[in-house]
Image (cartoon, rainbow, N blue to C red; front, side, top):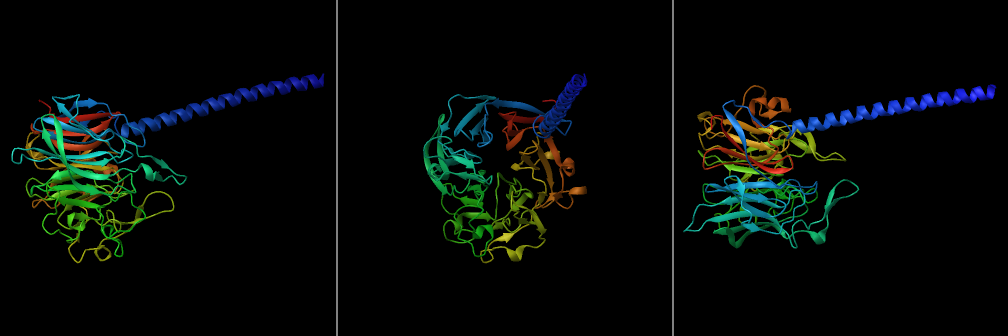
Length: 469
């Protein structure tokens, strides 16, 4: 009898325990799921799932165009750059290597050009600029990572140290700048202007390209994720000579050196307009002064806005923002000690290069991309010729006024020190938000602002217009 009762009691207790464990596990899974869902929704709210809004109640955003934009963790989004051609938009697909035409908000099915591009991470069809008519011809300048075999044939994988390594036999031909002639609905007669390095990569390719007030071609190229080779343009005094990486380059519309060069006469040093640049995805010229400005991406800290004068040294790898880069055993560079006066540590190419501290710094990275002066009063006189910057991490466009001589930004309150220490300090300079991963900004012939982004896994172009438009 005791044995039976003992067994029954044991069986009862076992069932109670099992039921309790099931309940606890269910509760744990539910709580975990809620946390994951909350985390996912929080990330969603932080980036692209906020309702797109403009801070100024007199303005609104419109979804001007939306198209395909599938991407993977190895290729990123398809939206890279755009420019206006009369009233139409020329839109670059980073991963497919196509230049498409957007007419009245709709895409023309037959692209102007289709090029084989390597597309892993930040490689691909990257930048575009259109020159004014020259002797009846209209030229289009393209910066892309040219592939040997086809789109995306470069193979890159993470190794056991979580570092991205590309297979040498699949590496692309190079980062290349071409000039094309527009003939009807096609781009023809390519002329190679620059053949730039592509390894180690596949990150920090830059890609922004502009025609300056001097009619020359300006473009950005980063350090190609170069963590091993030391170069003089990365501010290593005993480094190797420049090879085209890590700077803002300037050439004529035929690809020739402008004058004798700023930093020196040897090629390609003679093509550097600025150096010491880790990575940049945005350049634009002030319509009133002709000064060049850029955005720069730091590692885990120190995104920047800079006034770029001839021979500009941005300071990488000695300083980013106002901090020396510190390389921990794992992960990317972190902010080390403050360097208020780093000039003595920098390479100046016999006094021809000049360091200038950033005009604005994000201590927490936001991924600044496009930078644009709004040379129009269509959105209001209070925005005319002001500076706007888009970013990929927050889906935000920032708005900055300039000082009287237009060499600095007018910053007030917590931003008076030119540093946003956290995202809460950015509220005073937010112009629009909820626009996805913004990769380019332009001003249309109508005077309105257009923003290109990877939005909800699709390519999107938003237009900012007056509320009564």
